[in-house]
Image (tube, rainbow, N blue to C red; front, side, top):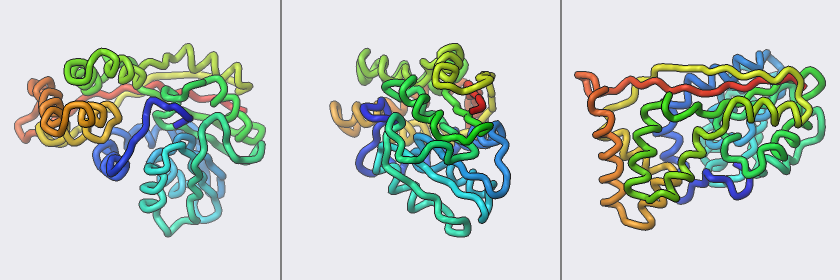
Length: 271
């Protein structure tokens, strides 16, 4: 996440983020990496890598002859990424860096990917211009950002609860999760110097653990949940989490799990 990003985690949140966000991220990481057509021996940058979801999957695909780098401004998340990455592959090199000031030479990578980070860059154009330095000629770029929250019932429920418990300002900040449009992404990619920018929506039905337990835990690892905790205490945060679960009650299956659609915008381009 770039400097002054709207997505910053502190304390033990990065470790718990790895646990409670993984079920939502996993299928979209697969789609993201399929879009750049990785191959054994490729060199990859995971931009705004967080705790390393995409970096780890990329390492498995490029194999021992490949190389994977991850960059993120949040050092707490990078510590989790370092601890979690598999040692059977060449070391994934994680670096603390903002998206608009990357410490890599031009034309270093065969592919650059960004999983759910671009919507939080304070200056999208500057970040993508910097990202455009990374790929070699003909190298590929792909990014995912969440589509409008009306297409993601879980995020719609979270928005309402964050507004109710954290206030309108917090809700407006949370709205950034799904505020970046396909047109804006396409324009920014073209301005940055990428060729053939294109976007498409990708939807998966994702089965989550019982909301009564999962929703409060997942909210607690988000910046907006942390803000509620700081302002109002643990009980209010727990109550907010239960309110998310209540909004999903009519979708909950007999076994307690809930299967919900999640839709992302997948943007691709070529250098």
